[in-house]
Image (tube, rainbow, N blue to C red):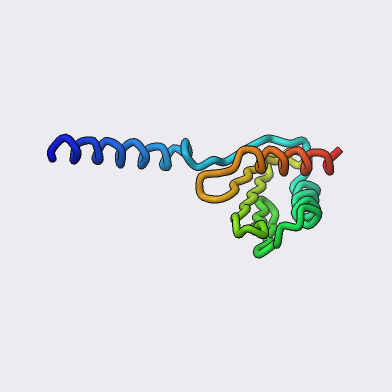
Length: 115
């Protein structure tokens, strides 16, 4: 019984530290050479073309947040942040643990709209 308790405690501590560091979060982050308004426009266009329902769409001088969902209910969160007047960071999270294939596909399509 004590062995199981110690093992469970270890697992909880491991996953807790991974979540705190973003290790298990499944986020895909990339720097792009685009102004924030241009990046935000590319994100919204990409989600519409991919038939991802947009549930939240906010932009201000420093950040943009677009939240949507696939037809299967998977949540998509895209956060953009201004770095300079001509550079931004984009972070894509699909579901709780992430979906690398879908995130990469969205990132590529967003990037193609910026060229």
